[in-house]
Length: 245
Image (spheres, rainbow, N blue to C red):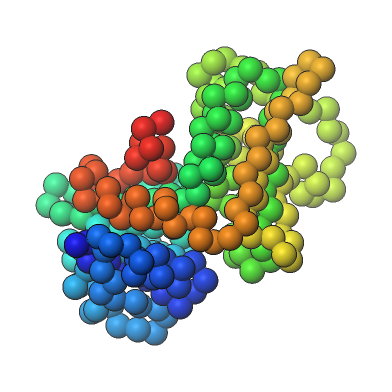
């Protein structure tokens, strides 16, 4: 039985994680912690799942690693600098491993994987991500990760940058430039989490799209990470390797 603690347990994603853990036959929810609660209850856990806020997630990870706990992180806001900082905490003397996933949806992970594979074959590529208006960061962690994967794949293949003759622009009209890939963020009531990778070539457009219709869709990926994190090596970014991609 895997003993699990949840940080951000009263949030929408955290509450969903608590329900999923309680329903899993091989897991036990031993701590449900949120803002203002003491962290002491987490010491009863083997794995802590964090769905909190970019402003506090780094301190949360550091505390958990310092107490020898494995951590599965769904909170977004991780750039290369933050990932390097987490790596620096996972030294030879620590016993906890960390999984940081920009998205726990199996379909979303496959969408990123397929976009990475397709990107070198098209002249143009842009990303459009849509989330609910209460999301605090833009672009989303999924879009940020996708842009990085796409950019790396194109660079490795020697693909030229996407053509763009824009000479006059209202600030933000062309989206954010993430590693040379334009990313457009929409915040819309009624939405949950949606992303399109749009690739264009001579006489054709190829769109790879993922839609999360319910937060429950992320739970299989979360539970997979909880089960696998103890056997991993320090820091793992994304679920790709856990799915054999």
